[in-house]
Length: 247
Ligand code: ADE
Image (cartoon, rainbow, N blue to C red; front, side, top):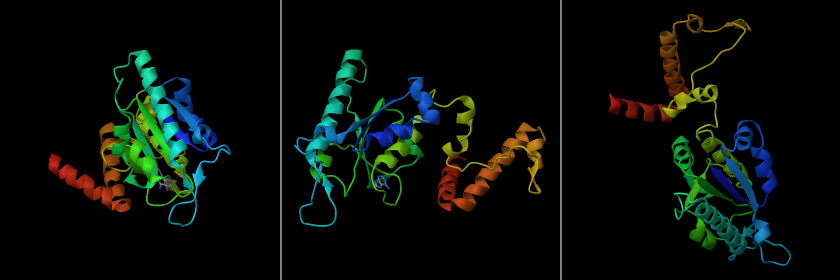
């Protein structure tokens, strides 16, 4: 999987991805990432990439030209590389994801869908957004990470890259992937405990010390269901409806 992030802050992206599990996956060549500076594509002699919005209003907008040229350059590199490598995906359109609070809200299902791609392009806006005309020409997916407004698209792009990367085969080792299986079924994770057996007068639930794997599994599933019902009634209702349908 190769992530291309079009941004005015390339260092933010590369330093954000250069830690822990994603760093390990990049070192192993399982995932690749590049941050492309949109400013490098401006034709303005002062390197300007933003201007005032027509009709007035607060703030500045990113202009169409640098965003368009940057996107086209990355798309053309991808296509050239695919043709050279004789990849079966040659000619297949690459998804260009614009991260914006106006997009569809990102969830695990969308992460699974993105993880099937071989390359993904993220377009990060700043200031008050990007000229609508270029969005109409290049964007295939409008994605939000939640109903709040951040200062730019870099953090949302990194959130999505993290969630997608951990679904790419080989990125997580066995222990790490087992860790979050429950969410895959639409339920929250059960509570977990480690040593010591008693801490602040609180005991670890005795069933976890019983050695009875079947009982432990049953207990964990029950806890997952209870926790989802209590903390995320919306997810619980969805899970119940799907569960009832499968019975
Ligand atoms: N850019 C600013 N806020 C955002 C959000 N909530 N999701 C995606 N992109 C954003």
